[in-house]
Amino acid sequence: MNIILLSGGSGKRLWPLSNDIRSKQFIKIFKTEDGGYESMVQRVYRQIKAVDTDAAVTIATSRTQVSAIHNQLGDEVGVSVEPYRRDTFPAIALATAYLHDVQGVAPDEPVVVCPVDPYVEDDYFIALKSLSEQAAKGEANLVLMGIEPTYPSEKYGYIIPELKDTVSPVKTFKEKPDVETAKAYISQGALWNGGVFAYKLQYVMDKAHELIDFTDYADLFDKYETLEKISFDYAVVEKEPRIQVLRFAGQWKDLGTWNTLTEAMDEPTIGEAVLNDACDNVNVINELNVPVVCMGLKDVIVSASPEGILVSDREQSSYIKPIVDKIEQQIMFAEKSWGSFRVIDVDEGSLTIKVTLNPGHRMNYHSHFRRDEIWNVISGEGTVIVDGMEQPVKPGDVITMQAGCRHTVFALTELKLIEVQLGEEISVHDKQKFELES
Image (spheres, rainbow, N blue to C red):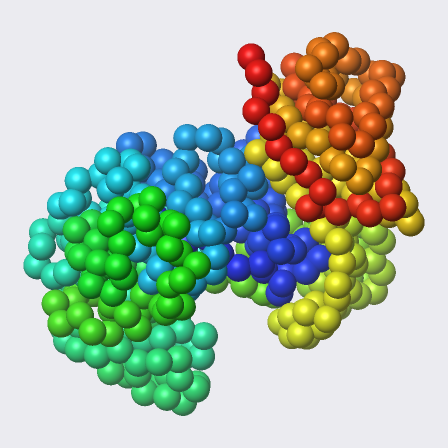
């Protein structure tokens, strides 16, 4: 099974845990068997592999999410990088070209496309396999998954099938309605359109060539900035006469707000938090190394991270985005392919960061022109290279790098260090990467 997972958005409705780099799908809130936590993307990837161990998974995403994807899923997962935001049709066309030209997927093989962040169980992924098999039959050019609605939602578009069979031709599509119109659609047998569908690879390649002048994946990537912003539904789905829908009756939730996200939590708190007996329907997610104490609260969500602190009535939490849009703030936490960093102090002329490198990983070999850096190793063992000179490091070691020095660090074990940046202009743009000679 070939699966493209669409991973986009900045997840501002889940501030302060989400930001422009860390979208909601990377927040670790789901309890695992070993007592740890996993994110939405980790959960979905694990579920796919449980149903089909040979599934080839490619994630279509922006540059800002690539490091977090590799951090959480490793290097085996395929990544189709969108150099600019251009809506779902260009993203799917680019990912399909990536499958064909980079991954070597044959033109007649089926491809399944779905969002990266639904809250679902294993029956959903069994249905994805059925969707792929139905597309392989060639009875239709597109096979959509239609989710049996559990309430008259205003958040989703609707698919009205011709028949009540498990697989049916599509009669028509309906845009997102109001509640009363949704009730009328459901009475006609309408299904939610969750943006899940399958096709033979060549079909989308043909559609892409009809609408875009390009030769192959590399050419399409280079031209991506010039592409029209257009959704896959508008460019392809609504104009396709040979289209089917496969009915799905299992659990399917969009965890796009604090209210829906906390409903999926296995326990009321994550992190250091205390709720007294007078609390009712309260959830706390705390990523800070300080205790959060809640007393006598009802229907409240509390979230604390280096980005900020949210204390909200459960219902009001859905309206956070316009408020967060007005907040201008430096990214305080991010996952990288080599580990993660957390900003612990910001001052005029200095920035202090706690850096964690995963065993066997290293930073890019790089330099800065406008700042000096100091590394103070606090745990673990590794190797530092500064201007080609290599030396081992251990807890207590201090490495000083003047502006212009090329430097990197390898982690032999999990390596933690405090990085102090000193300079009048400290910016993420002040960085030049180099190849490291072996």
